[in-house]
Image (tube, rainbow, N blue to C red; front, side):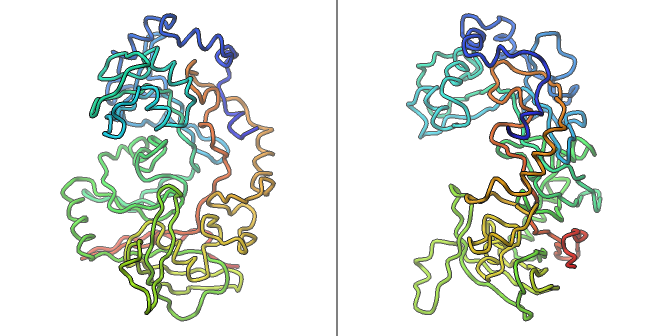
Length: 432
């Protein structure tokens, strides 16, 4: 049983998991009239009362949130070191791409959005949970390029670690924070409220915010936001002009070389696999044949105990996973980075240190054991379930295993013309 199996709605409504009863509810002819009307008409007013249910609604009404609805403090649930979001109804809006045109509405969703079964999409179209240009359409409807598609869902966001997003420095046009690992910077994928931008808006009323740079979700440390578009544009010009200097620290495997090391090797990111590879040419190699982008990182050892080293990392360029893959290339990968630890190094990632999933990672690790012990003590957490939702009655979405920890990579300093912003070191930066 997954961790989130116990974090579930406490009501006794088991009928929604029985195929026959669920199908009768979501069929086009049997869906309650008020439900179909609300899907087309009812919207939560921007900035209005909070909670996953859209507070203040009449009994039985479904209130649909859109990206214009800000996150609010009461949207969050803190439990056993994780920050959860109360599930809420949400309208996803997309427009038909050229390559989608000519497909039926059901086939489009089944092929492009594979997180739900085919039968769900049939039912969603039939009862109006999926609409085209604001209209309910038949399952055989052929989509056309640029048409607006709305998908009304009961949204479950993945949990993140519950560390505070602490404000380091606040100015009229700039705010800097210490980003905890596991929290995305801005809305992306399954994350909307459980993001740094969402949390700062909910807990500190900071909006709008313009990220000056990005950090990978599992990376922690300094994050700079402009508080208006003109300041964001000034930072953009400085970045494009190569006027910014960046510093990170990492905890790596082994005894890193005492002398400074500079890695100049192309980085090729594979979006499908979600990882980068290094392409290093030599004097006989035609660099024009290299697919990756030119990348350079400078490394300086800060300390070592023989087993691990703390390394200062100064990326000259900014490629995806650049520091991580360049450290792997140097022979000293980040010590808990399962995405870039080679097979023979897997044993270096000791208990509780895993930061990315590895295909061969044993499910019997101590991380899993600790979560199994916690499961026995977890109570049910109540929230309003949706009869059509494929994630209810769980609080977290399906597929989330709960074993995630932060990467040992932390941004400590950004500087530019006339300014410097810094962030404290993390606890793991001290070697015993």
